[in-house]
Length: 185
Image (tube, rainbow, N blue to C red; front, side, top):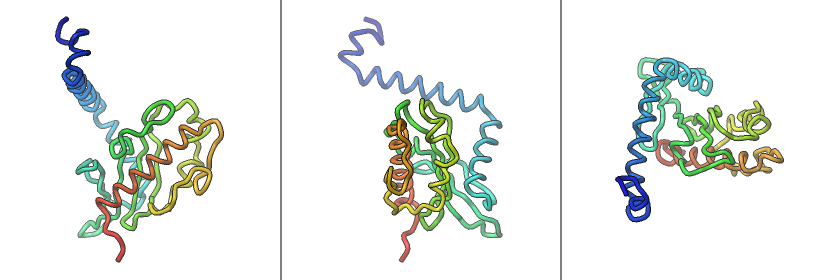
């Protein structure tokens, strides 16, 4: 019955899950190191797409994980935050699994925009990958309803993908706003 045999899976599932988690964390870490500067340049370009006036970005930090966006000037004011939806709302799934979306939010709780990352959605090419999808989130307030078919355009045949993407953007943005942005007085 070995360390990961049938007996372990049935009678010690948490031990098996722990081993799988350690292995997957190692593989993800190794993949990140192997990507090197190319991944950093791509991420910086995506962040700059969301915040064109930004002077710099912090490394990913905090809980929930986020990037702090700094403006120009001697005191480098914080002008916003960016985050990956898969890290802030990790349990949300589209038709093909998690949908990584980089979301930018300013200090007033208004979305600077979104960038859809690599995903496995079978209907993404006519829903979330089209330029119209991210465009409708620019300047959207976190207090807006984010209702598919209401203030967010729906695409028939891609309901699961569109619903999951919209929910993860809404829920992630609201979580970041609650934890990092001071509400207006």
